[in-house]
Image (cartoon, rainbow, N blue to C red):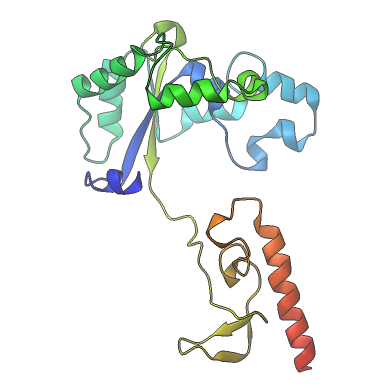
Length: 225
């Protein structure tokens, strides 16, 4: 996906959705954006995640986020996207064709549209159906509006690399020898802390690797002492 976007010559893309979708599916990272979780309140969770309407933090992004365009119809949405875009030109007719083709499959029980198939599969799980995944609908249906476009900027968040270490968490030189007295622990010691999970590490699984590499470094230093 990233290669396809960058091949266009631009370092960003667009995500087009509706108010109905963003109310249910737009999740924000960070404890400050999820007060129902940080407060450990079932009442707050029910109000923010089950009630109709956008959660407060999400609504704030739609109103004040510099990468959000909110409009009542597609023509105005495209105009706002082109005004916000960094030199990019979104063609109204091309976008309308793409969305209309997708919308035509909403009521098709045998649709092969990949996005709609993923939505239907997700909603087979009751928890996702209630809380996380909006009911499929036509994006151009005014009843589910307004339309929303989010500019997606490509950036590097982390390298998922780190310093090469041996089993004692010693930092290795390019020639394969170890730096005397230099150790690395945590995420700096490779992906997720010493590469415990290899290429399959997920967010939330790094702590174990960080503890493992820290223990290895600590034991190695103690042996040196």
